[in-house]
Image 1 (cartoon, helix red, strand yellow):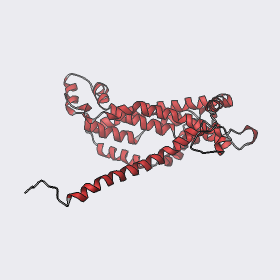
Image 2 (image 1 turned 90 degrees about the vertical axis):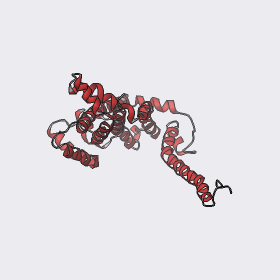
Image 3 (image 1 turned 180 degrees about the vertical axis):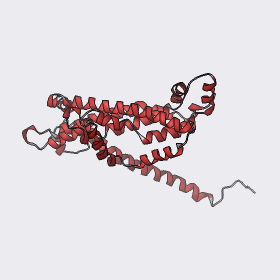
Length: 294
């Protein structure tokens, strides 16, 4: 008697496996189309003339006018778009860099040092993660108004330097990937706490810190509410506020901004995010074994 023959009960399970795979692939395909369709439309629309945006297929190319659109974007209003891009880079790079360092220091301290009130502090960080950022816009405005920081670079930079989610992520990663043995070895060799943090902890935590930097950079670059509330000077505005301002001007008489210029400006503003994401994604693949004791 052959005891290795498949039983009848195994056939339905084997038959259901391909069906479940196709179902998962179908859901992923629909989700991909849902998220990528607006990006494709933006890319296609940026190559069209203002009249071409309202004729033909919106998801396919027409009269190619990308270079003319780019020229109009960067020369309009004496090249103010360059200033908006520079302001966005200043806010995003400065805020994300400072936020990453603060998150690393706070997360490392919460993970590796025992002190009174540590858990209470961490619970406060968790509570701050749950607070929607728009709720803080008006209190920040009132506080900065009293400090005479409204309509300055600091009005956007200072709030961007703190990320509760970054502190949370850094604390979780430091607890899991920075071995206590490495810290103790550094202390035995005579290294101070600051040197241990700078030479050991930061290197081990680098995958998490790259993620914190990227998330914070994207959040600052795409932020609209805080800059529009804090900044009145057009030369201090980031690119998000500037493009929305152009969009509001497209129906205001002879000085109106053409719609193709607005769309192309929006497309250009997304390019740094794509470049940053593609250039940093390889760091995400570093595993938690980066901090193992050799």
